Image 1 (cartoon, rainbow, N blue to C red):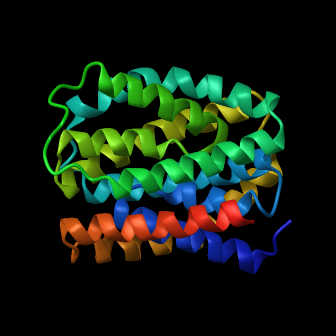
Image 2 (image 1 turned 60 degrees about the vertical axis):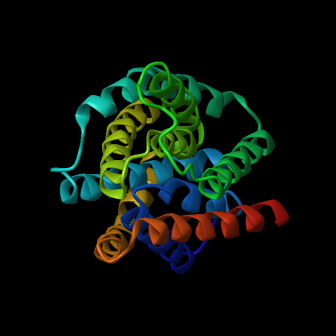
Length: 239
C-alpha cells in the first residue's frame, strides 16, 4: 500500500489534469495506483475522485454545457458501467492492468490525432458507441475517458463546449459507478474513506487547473493533455 504522501501527490496531479483538460484524472490516478496496489482497490479509490472533480468543472462551465449532446452518450454509458463492474470482479489483475495501459495509450493516440475539421455532424450512432465503450472501462477501471474524448474531438467543438460535455458525462457516470460499486460490495468502507481523504489535494489542484485553463489557447489545451498522457503511458508500459 502506498504511503499517504505518495497518495497525496498522485491525487493532486490527477486533480490538476482534470481542472485543465476536463478529463484524465482517472487515467493519471489509475496509471500510477495500479503499480502500488490491487486494481480493484485502486478503482474504488479513484471512483471517489471520478465523482467529485467533475462536479467542480461542471459548476464552472454550467453555462457552456449542451445537454442535448450529453444524453445520447449517457444512454449507453450507464448500463455499460454495470458490465464494467462485473468484469472488474471476474478478470485477473494482470488483464485489468493491461486494460489500464490500453486506455492510456488510447488517450495518447486521441491527442496525437486531432482532426482539423468536424468529422461527425450528428450524435447518433457515434455518441452511443462512445458511451458504451467508455462505460465499460469506466465501470471496470475508471478510465472511460478516451472513447468519449475522441468523439468530442470528431465533433469539432471548441474547448469550452468540449470540456462542458465531458464534465457532465463524468459527473453522471461517476455517480452511477459509485452506486454500482457500493451495491455490488466491491467498494469497502476503508477504500471509500481513503478516497474521500484524497479529495482535499485533488479538489485544490482541480481548482488551480480551472484557473490555468482560462489562460490557455485551444492548442495549448490539447498539447498539455497529450504530453501528460504520453508520459504516463510510457511509465506504465515500462514498469
